[in-house]
Image 1 (cartoon, rainbow, N blue to C red):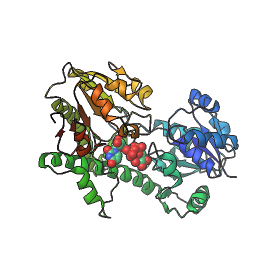
Image 2: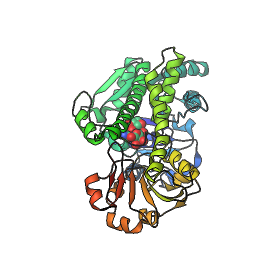
Image 3: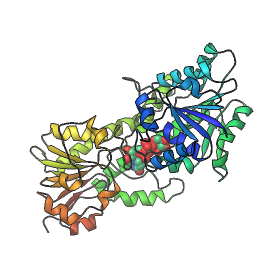
Image 4: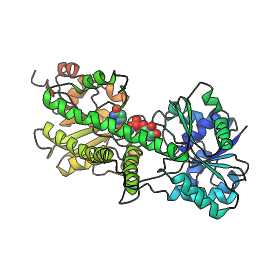
Length: 441
Ligand code: UDX
């Protein structure tokens, strides 16, 4: 059984490591955060990801998945060592902060066996692989090969995305590295997953091009939703109508309050910085970034207007704080802009999120934290839905109507159909569709 090491046991490293062990590799996940490793050794998870707890416990029990904070011993005997540490936006300029990547690479270089391959799985700017090679050559004489293998995991569906990828991208510089990486993915490519073998730079570029394109696609439909509201068109049907064109595709055309998360915001910023560094600016993505940031503020205006022009003294229930459903992650979530702005405008806010409350506590305050959606809604002047958690779809609308002081729902994820909700007697404001007023019925 091939032994691999995954340096970094976060959203990418832990999921990837567990999935690699599931497909039959012997995996050691390393993290410098001893608390995180202790938690994993105790059978608890430092992150929420559907299905991950079972995947980890099964593979730990099978003896294929191990955790340690001792990188030096972990890399001994490992043929492939992945780097899956964070690459956050650097303070101030948006460049990717590669200090954790380089630190991991240098630590690996100090103790990896001859012939090991270092693979970047973290999202790293074009040219990082070559930089890693230069830094390693200063530490040891024998050349450690460097490869790139970007991930395309979405939080909330990461295991499925790993096990059923649209493609595997591998950047290598030798046929030996290619053979070894093909071995790593052999169980996956058995079900005929396309494996693209290319250069380091190209593999790094594919990752950024993918994420920035997806962020652009979302921003495109978001801007069109504003035009739909003005013209009386329905953005959901526009998305359906264009998405059926095979050249466009129907995914990532859900208009909302703007994209968030730990990837699109940082990857778009890093990409435009890299492009500027090479004197080849990608001004389209620069526009996407500013449109997305402005959108969150526009959503505050939309909410205030829906309350008649002022939220001063209003009690508002916010449902959903995470940047998307099925995750506990609130990084760069629209809620982190919208909630404080509503408070500043004089509203009293009650919040509920199925999984994101603990994380959100680190970013927002001056709100009341509700244990369930109905207690957040009780006595409020209106409800604002920021994240499309499945459980919000099945809320008892009759009960909500009774609980609310006034029957107003502002749905920034278009979870409900205006025709249905108006029958329940709500005033309903959504995205890219005309507001409907059922309370006067
Ligand atoms: C993204 C990429 O999808 C994934 O391939 C990459 O590896 C990591 O970054 P993630 O950030 O986990 O994954 O979530 P994703 O589902 O892509 O959503 C990102 C943001 O876009 C969320 O805030 C989501 O609400 C928003 N979004 C997504 C929309 O507003 N509309 C859509 O149609 C899809």
